[in-house]
Length: 163
Image (cartoon, rainbow, N blue to C red):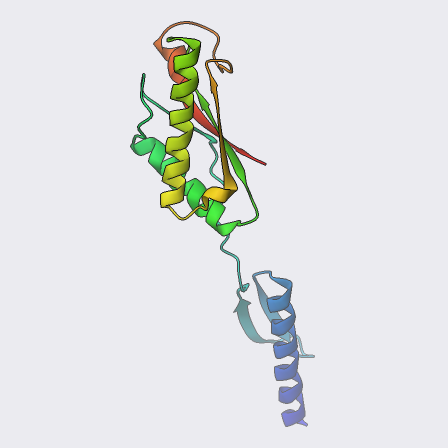
């Protein structure tokens, strides 16, 4: 009788563990016998629970008249590369933007260099360039309408948009 109870408990634990593994959830399972005494506590981990998180910011910022990526921009893009590599079905568009200084033509070209710089960095981190489009809006889409360095700095950016 005691051997049968132990066999049933082992089978019950195995079935619960297998069900949780396939369900993809992680939690402790406590199995009790008919006398309500704990028999075994087991933690079941999901097979694939580590998907990279999308970075909280979709913009990287540039210095005046530059398309060079600074350390903060590279850190943001490293997070995007990890997220994109973990989510192969997602494609993005990189939008290059500038502040209002400079001619319209110059800013369109600078915005394109900024977008290309971001694309090239992501590509160096394993993101396929076939998943990335680039476009320049030059000075046409400012996020800050005022004048002055604090406002202009917000407009010198590359935005990453999922599509």
